[in-house]
Structure formats: structure tokens, C-alpha cells
Amino acid sequence: MELPRIEPYKIKMVEPVLFSSREDRERWIREADYNLFNLKSEQVLIDVLTDSGTGAMSQKQWAEIMLGDESYAGATSYYKLKNAISELLGFPFFLPTHQGRAAENVLFQTLLGHDAPDQVIPGNSHFDTTKGHIEFRHAKPLDITIDEAFDTTLEHPFKGNLNLVKLEAALREYGPARIPLVLVTVTCNSSGGQPVSMANLRAVSDLCKKYGVRLFFDAARFAENAYFIKVREPGFADSTIREIVREMFSYADGFTMSAKKDGIVNIGGLLAFRDEDLFKKCCTFNIIYEGYITYGGLAGRDLGALSQGLYESTEFDYLQARVGQVEYLGKRLREFGIPVQWPIGGHAVFVDAKKFFPHIPQDEFPAQLLGVELYIEAGVRAVEIGMLLADRDPVTRQERYPALELLRLAIPRRVYNQQHMEYMAVALKNLWDRRESITRGFGIVSEAPIMRHFTVRLRRL
Ligand code: F0G
Image (cartoon, rainbow, N blue to C red):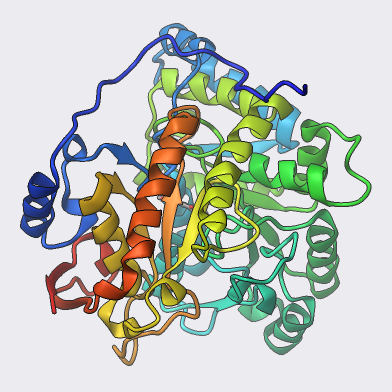
């Protein structure tokens, strides 16, 4: 008999969780105005709100926490991180930042300034903070993900790919004067943790070179992207993850990275460049916003843990267990007939709420409803990636109706086991079985002018 695959580690420290009753959860979520972000973590049994900063560090990473030296300038751990970035990713210049959106802030402030209404930033679906940084500066994010990504039932190995015809049309129309960079998010979180193929990265890079436009990656989940290239793209089965990572990054002029994902640290971000001039320009903003250029809002120890995390996340055995766990949950849901973004992404399972609750109109927030019901059913906290997140158009203030209305179950790295996946699958199946008895969604009581989903207050209709 073939032995089942197991995680390439064992657990040596645990964090207790508290059990609760349905009545407790009904009360807590009402008091939280039906906003899952308002729950206290102790009110949550399995927290799949995000895979960001929620991973378990290894003993070697904790050792780096002790070894990290806390010099303001030029800490030993800074040089460790510099070596890791040079060796694994191939970039000569970088800035640490306190997290991914801070790297975005420094980069976009440098490239766009405060007010850049004529600037356009094409890419596959930008993450919400990225979109926020672009729109906050009155520039325009352009989503040119391939159409296949927006049909959750369609089988496609690389639903994060960019539509090259649309990219070339944008490059031709706006050119380098109006496109400061093309941004490719690997894996593409907003389309369901979907990877971008090496062939697509290469072609995007060729187009960018042809039109003289910079190419940056949003590299939060670069290692998971490399894993998918290895297992899905012809020609890469025999390459190591690190070889694939090196080739991926060879196509980019720079990257932003939330290190809280594939860096497997609890806090941290990166901004890297090939171009020394751009690096120097960004240094000024890094110092103003983040901290000196060799620590950027982090402690020396954080830099050491991150350098070690980059090595660990680019190991095949780790990635196979990691992505395999997410896939296990997705497959269980599919076996129950529950509609999920298919194929399953690298870091999360995305349940298609439009198909789960076809009788609930999108402006009653069906994905949020599914999230709240899942919490009440089982104490599981997932997150809405739908109309609340899509927010209003910043100019017209009209509601935006995104093509996808999803509930995301983002799995923290090295934290939960297969029984936790099973528990979540059964919880969703119970809801699936009684989905027709759930008939109304939510209305908005109050919302912030930007990024409303974090603080929105809702009421049941
Ligand atoms: N880019 C991507 C693709 C992300 O997924 C995130 C964060 C960021 C940038 C911003 O990074 O949080 O370190 O400032 N995503 C988290 C999530 C929050 O839950 O998907 P950050």
C-alpha cells in the first residue's frame, strides 16, 4: 500500500483554542455588527480569515529571533536577508518594510506622487491594498486577468495569467508615459490564489520590454506560484523550486512582497529593484514612512526570521504539504457538491457564493452571509471577497458588482491539520444542505469611504 503523505515537520509548541456554543456565536456576531473582522480571536475556533502573518515559524526561525541584532543601521540580520534575496530571488537592491502594503506605499509614492490621474497600472487582479494605493493617488488599476479566471467551474491550470492581447492594447494605448509599471501578482489572490505560468510571465516581460515599461511582481505568494509551475507546466517537473523561483524573478524589474505569506513570518515586507536609481528614490520615502533603509519598520530579529523563512518556503516538501492541505479541503467541498473556484488555489479555498445562494441578490452580500452562517455553524472565521471588498467606485460612489462573489478560507501555514480541514468541510456541507432555508442577506448600517469591508456595520434584512 502506498504510504499517505505527511507534513515534513512535527509540532513542538501549541496555542489553545476555546470552544463555544452556537448561542455564544450568535450573540458575538450580532455584537460585531455581522462583521467578522470585529470578532475577538478567542471567539474563533478555526481562523481562516487570512494566511497573512498567521503561519507557524520553525525552530530555526525562532533561533534567528534570538540571533538577530538590533542595530539601527546595518544589522547582521539585514545582511543575512540581503544574501537570501540575492541568492534566492536574484535582486541586488531591496528595502525592508513593515508589511506588504507599506512596500506598495513607498513604491507608488515614488512613481505616482500624490495625484496621478492620468496614470494606469495594468496587471492581473490587484490585491485590495494595492488597488487602494493606486486609487488613493487617483490613478487607475486595470484588471487584465484572463477571462477564464472569472468562471469558477472552468478547469484551467493558470487562472492568474494575464490576457496578453489586452496587455499589449493597454501598452500601445498608454505607453510608458502613462504606465509607470505593470504589476503581476503571483499567485493572484483576488482571482482565487491562482498561479501565473512561466510562459505568461515570460510573454508579459517581453511585451513590457518592447514598450519600455517596467515589470514588477507582487510576490506575496511567489513560492506557491513556483510549486504550481513545477507540477502543472510542461518542462518544469524536473526543476527545483529554487530554479523556478530564480527564473520567475528574472523576468521582473522589481517586486513588492508581503513577507507575512511565503516569508512565513508574522510581520514584514519587502521592496526590491534591479535599478539602482529607482532604489535610491524609494530610499527617501522608506526613511520617511518606514524607518532606516536597513530595517524599514522591522526589528533586526524579524529580518533574520524572514531570511530563514524564504529558504524554508522554497523547499518542495514543505510546499507539497502546504498546497496539498489546501487542495484536500477544496476537494472535500467539491465532493459534497459545494461550488468552489476550480482548480483550488495555493493558499485558500474560495467558495462561490453566487452559486451557493443563487436566490440572494448580490447587493445583499451573499458571500458575507455565507461567512456569518459558517461562523455561527462552527466557529470558523473566513473572509468575504465580494461586493463589500469591491467597494464603491471612488469617483461615482456607485456600488461595484464584482464578477466573483466568494468566501475565502485562507489556510495559515503549518498551523492546522487534516482534521481541521475535515471539520470545515463538514460545517460547510451542513450549510449547503440547508441553503434554501437561508433567504435574506444584509444591509449596510455604516461604511468608511475607502476599504469599507474592514469596519462596515451590517444588519440582517
Ligand atoms: N499583495 C497581496 C497579493 C496580498 O495578498 C496582500 C495581503 C498584500 C499585497 C498586502 O500585504 O497585508 O502585508 O500589507 N493579503 C492579506 C490577505 C491581508 O489576507 O490576503 P500586507
